[in-house]
Structures are given as C-alpha cells and as structure tokens.
Image 1: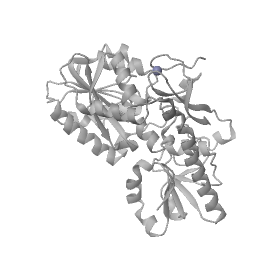
Image 2: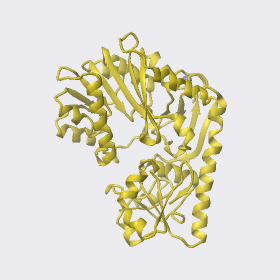
Image 3: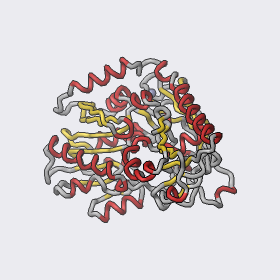
Image 4: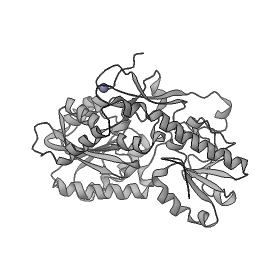
Length: 405
Ligand SMILES: [Zn+2]
C-alpha cells in the first residue's frame, strides 16, 4: 500500500509521531473478550511535505475501527452545551439568520446544538450517521439525515446560509470529498464554520494523547486554507478557542462571495510560519517530546508503587487509551479507571485492560493519587470530586507535563 497524502497525493516521507500499535480507542472489552486475541493497528502520523497536512497512516481493514456501540452523546457535557449555545447566539447575530434562512449541521450528534436554532424558528437540518444520536435529535423535532456527509450526498441537500461542523473535520477519512460537499451545499453568499483542534497547540502543549485512529487529520490554518481553496472555498475569518486544549474556528465562503477577509487570518498564518510550521524540523522534533512526557508519567507510577501509594484514573476515553497504550501501562500500575458512562462500566480499556468502574468506586477505594486522563476538563472533574481532594487524594495530569496538585 502506498503512503500518500490524503489531500494532495504527495508521497509521505516525514514521520510526525509513532505511538506503536494500538487497538481502536472505542473497542472496550468485556470479561469474555479478555480471553481472545485483540486486534491492533499501527498508530502513526505523517506530515505531508507539500501541503503540511498531518495525518494518520492508512492501512487495510480500516472499517473495523468504526463500531457504533459507544456513541458519545454531546449533551452529557455541560461546558460543551454552553459552548454550543454561545456559538448560536453569536452566529445568528453575525449572519442575521431568520426564519427564511437554512442551517445545516454536519455530525449533528444528539441535536445539542441545532435545538438552539429550533428555538429561534430558524429552519435546520442535521446530518448524522450514528443511529442512536440521530434518533435522540429527531425526538427533539430536529430533521436528521442518517448518512455520512460528502460531495455526492450534498447534491441532494437544500442550499444553506450556514453549514457548521464542530469537531468533525479532523475525523473524516476523505477530507477532500467532505470539503467539496461543503461547497456543494452552500448558497452563493453562504458561510461555513468549522471547529477543530489546532495542530500548533497540540505541538506546543505536547498533546500526543489526542492522537487516535479515528482522528485522521491534525490541522493548521496553513493546511486548511489550502484544502479549502482546492474545493473553491476561501477562509475569511478565524478565531482561536480554548476548547480541546486549543481549537480553531474557521469561517469560509465561496471564493467570489462578498465576505471581506479579516486581518486575523493573515496574522495567524504568519504566526504558524513564525513557529516553523512550514519547516520539517517543527514536525520531526515532536516524537521526542511525546516520549519525554511518557517517561515522566511512567516514572511517577513506578515511584508511587515503590512508595506503597495507591493510584486510580478518571475518564475511560480516547486520551487515556492513547497514553496507557503508548506507555504500556497495565492494571498493576493503574488498578482501575472510573467513568460516569454506565455503558462502559464493568468493561475494560482496550489494550491496557484496566477495568472500568463507576465514580462511586472512588469512595470505597479512595486512591492517594487520581490520574485525570481528560486534562481538558480538569476544572469540571475537580469540582465534581471536591470531596476526594478534601480527604487528601492528589490529582495528577501527565500532559503537557506531569502535574500533581
Ligand atoms: Zn499533502
């Protein structure tokens, strides 16, 4: 199989990150599964020397990655709901959307965002391939197409004044087809907004644990402007957001549309260049940064065991799986992980086989140290588990560097 750039087809020769082999991050195991072999795939990222798209390595049987058993319902995160409501307030005002407008959300999940348009009588449509979340949105009265978004299906959609996608752009395997779909379904003066984690921050803050197989692309403004331009779209504004450790929200329109380009676009492109994002060194140095974070975390776990201190973890999701598998951590170093999702409790993390228990397990087996895998929601977790901290448990995060507080 040739290893070529998903966007511009240049041969990929510069490795960005190699995390070894890992199982799909959502392949939670039952106790029966533990006596069977487990499928793993290489978890390697390459950077294109031409368009600078950072991307996962392609391999055969990629469809095995997509199981729908563990659909994530966006409505479960309070901070994410607030983020969505603020966005809708802003964009309705900025684009003067009315009951004559049309809004499309790609990867509309359980309707947590579109319901804000519904409340304002702004017609909207969700596109969401995952059945369980799509049905939850329909129950709220939101029309949903249960399909993957792309150029072909976009031809059937009503033209939109606004197409939005929050945390979907980095997760689509065929980014060119997806982007052509955006152009296809846009009115002549329509606007696209996309949010995705910013590669510049990923590198700055050592966020290698945000890498997993289903996260196909790691995006800079430099690469996104090129990908969009090739699909006839012009990025005319960009905002930096604190979500997911540092995200971008880009605004794009058809090349010839009237939206004036804001100075922030040129400024951020210049900032990315200043940091070296057009040079090989920026990418080739990341592996050793990731290894150094991993080594510090392992050292902490080994020291804790030597000193007879107990350790548990919080958050059975992708970040924890990536870190645990890269570091080769097993239940002897982290005996259990807590998660509020009932569907995961009683199961085991893929690869590391750490058992998943409900958060109430922390009251019974209060650990000396609690490793919080999702560092991006640390304030939320701390507030929820304030009692634990009062009783003397120390909270630990490994990324961007070891922190015990
Ligand atoms: Zn490329």
